[in-house]
Amino acid sequence: MGLGLPGPGDFAQAQDCLVHYSGKTRFKAHRRGSACFFAGMIQTDVCIVGAGPVGLFAVFELGLLRLKAYVMDTLPVVGGQLAEIYPRKPIYDIPGYPSVLAGDLIDRLMEQIAPFQPGFGLGQKVVGLQPMEGGKWAVQSENGETVLAGAVVIAGGLGCFEPRKPDLPGLAALEGRGVSYMVRDPEQFRGRRVVLAGGGDSALDWTLQLADIAGELTLVHRNQAFRGAPESAARVQALADAGRIRLLTSTALISLGANAEGNLAMVTVQGQGKEPFHLQADDLVPLYGLTPQLGPIAEWGLALEASAIQVNTENFQTSVPGIFAIGDINTYPGKLKLILSGFHEAALMAHGAYRYIHGGAKPSFKYTTVTGVAGL
Image (tube, rainbow, N blue to C red; front, side, top):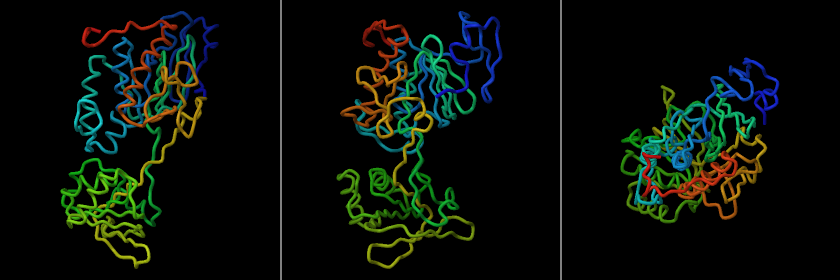
């Protein structure tokens, strides 16, 4: 679990400022009792690993308790999966919003947390965590940035994730040349011949979204029945019945073909018990879901269950005091992987983090309708 950083005992005998190195990180260790243990190290009350919607809302809940937050994320932008995978996808179960685009929800959350002036370390993967003196934690990224925090909140969604890819010859050569694994901007497909592949919610939702945008749209699913929401499946079938899209069920992707410029030009498919046939295509988007990986988090000594972090539901603390986990990355009896549930977890976590940082002291709880936000 260690980072190769100085541990608590390394400061006990320190008489002067010592220069230490850890990989690419250079920092000074001050003698114990000085204003800070490390010069040049970012210091904050709480370090949040994950800048998705739940991590961002955690900034707000911590801010209400006057706890400063520093947010780290592998992605170069805030928003997590909402920004990276489906920024233009509507979400229907956020209180107060009958419908809100994923990207717009992130914008609103950023407005909400602005008064608390959080810090951000984006575009860097957190690779290590080490306990420090006084119950604090040193969090280090692969870029060499080190954050000293009173508590750590893991809000990494699915953790490190990779798209599940079909086993097709020549697939890698066409990635970025017509083959992609997510829809960042629906407008990029306007007027184009698009083939979507998959049978879950993402495939169904994007079929519905792109039906009026793509010049020609085909949905290929290897099974007869869909895994996604029945209502969405019925709407997709209605589009197919009306001739607005081509729907190919019980059909598998077989191979790909490129044009002289090396861009995707053809997708070959085969139905069960039928001969293969070719689809002219400018774009192929396999939507087979994501493969979640905890990455370095798996080595931090936390109690895990099925690649998720076990927490108690009183304050969403993990098996290690001072480390909390909220959102899709945690697990507990009755867990629902909803943004709404993550917001609830963030509120309880904030109070738990306050108690941890302040030696068990209970925070002064006030309603925002009374105090407002700007005055906190």
